[in-house]
Image 1 (cartoon, one colour):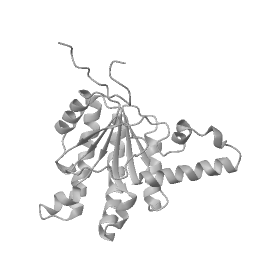
Image 2 (cartoon, helix red, strand yellow):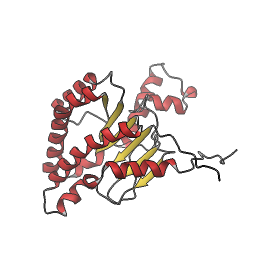
Image 3 (cartoon, helix red, strand yellow):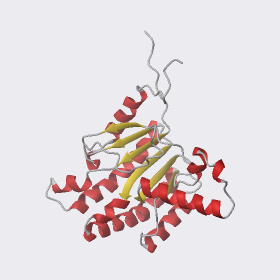
Length: 240
């Protein structure tokens, strides 16, 4: 019997869904669910190191999330600030590099300053590359990339005829990062929700019934194990 190929995995992206609903189902405030979800991040980052995942990207706040109540949005921004302050020392000690993708213009200036600071503090770390998508939307990213390319063409730094996929990738928020191999979404939803539409065009997807606060290292490992058994054709035929 031919032994199944164990696929290597380099980059996992996760849509951390279900925090608010998890809290409401337990009679708690929605922000309680978000705080519980923030604590889960550290466990999954550490599990990534154990499982050999070099890149982990987490969808923390989308461009559409501004539609939520002012109380929830303000609370989420406070959670992001506290997370950076509380976890920066451990990230440095454990070799985690933290980066952010998304548009920073609408974010609080103090939060942006913290984001810049922790990126600088962890820039030399290589154990796990953690990317947080904050005020991120895939369509927004493509619009911003198109605007930057248009300006480059206008200034004479870019020739329209030379624009190809590699050129576009250089103008995306994720420039220099590998595309995700696997995208996991929690909370039993079956949508991609405008998350990495360019980068995840050939990613495998895994949909988990449990909400993000109930996600675990064991579920993470199972998702990766399932991925490693899949055949990835990329438009070709296996064995050709």
